[in-house]
Image 1 (spheres, rainbow, N blue to C red):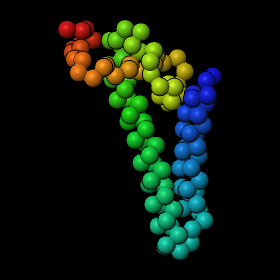
Image 2 (tube, helix red, strand yellow):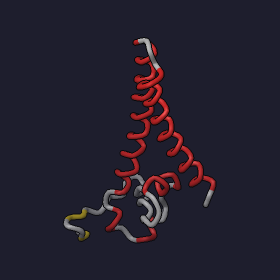
Image 3 (tube, helix red, strand yellow):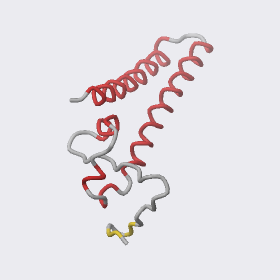
Image 4 (cartoon, rainbow, N blue to C red):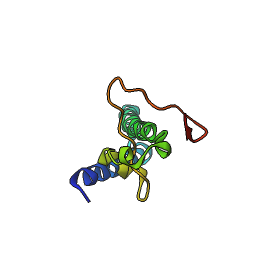
Length: 109
């Protein structure tokens, strides 16, 4: 595995572990309202970051089934890790000013 892929995997697992830890600390450890508020705010921030990265990865996946393999191989390593093994890479963005092909019902126009 390439270093970028390991970094993406480690970052994803770190965020998941942070969500678990802050959820447990909010539920079982924090006793006063200000501590609960700080744990909950931190959990919200970590969850927002985790979901934002997931949205970016899913948006890059949109329409990948209709693109040639050459375009689909240029995805960043971190997005391949989030999709899991066996999934094709997300397509690279077209050059600035180049029109994107319109796709309807799985067939290019």
